[in-house]
Length: 58
Image 1 (tube, rainbow, N blue to C red):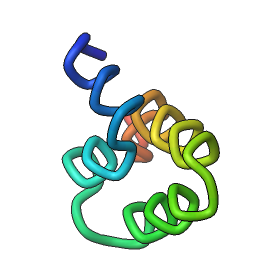
Image 2: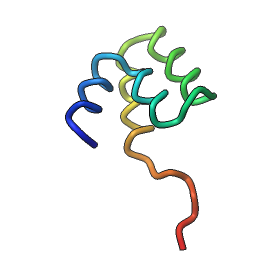
Image 3: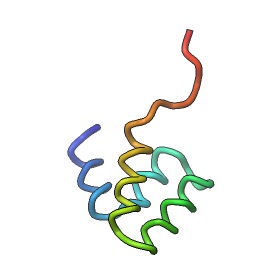
Image 4: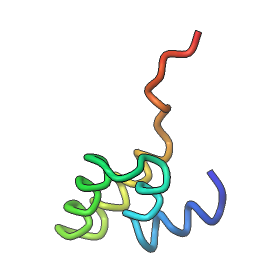
């Protein structure tokens, strides 16, 4: 994860989620969490950035 993505994750959590996942449920969930409180949105954004792509690699 680059320094720019870390800064974006801390300052504007929905932006890196949108860049990685696109517009979908993860983005909507992150926006909701960020509106509830900044910290849950940041935690979710870091989780989205650090988890795998979900595809099975052989």
